[in-house]
Image (tube, rainbow, N blue to C red; front, side):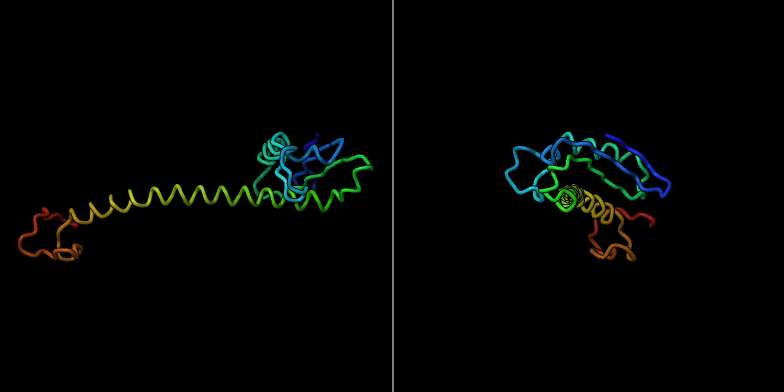
Amino acid sequence: MTVASNASGEARIELRLRELAQLFDSFDPAPFHEKDLDRDAEEFIVSWAREFPVDAPLVLRLHLPRDQERFEPQRTVQDAVRNYFAYRAELAGLEVRRTLSRAAPASASASSSSWSACCCASCCAACKGASGCTSPRKAC
């Protein structure tokens, strides 16, 4: 396993494997291009990718024995890695949206209580200073 950055600024992560199947989760019955990556392989790729600048183009280069060419490794790995990390990014995005949606009601109730605490004609649409308003008058 090799990690390097070349003169063009691309970040290169190289893996030397005995067989293509080492890159994938052996318990996943899906075809190669739909399989999950092996946890160790994913951890290796991600940990090294984090070492490079965010804007550096990443290159994953695999070194395989000739007998693995029958699996069309270039196309298979490109599709599989792209699909896998796109799926992971989608899950991360969903998690962020769920977290934000849980925080939004608390934020909305906090802002609405501070809104109603100010009772002046210019900002309190609910009472506009009408008689019987029990909110204390504050300077805005």
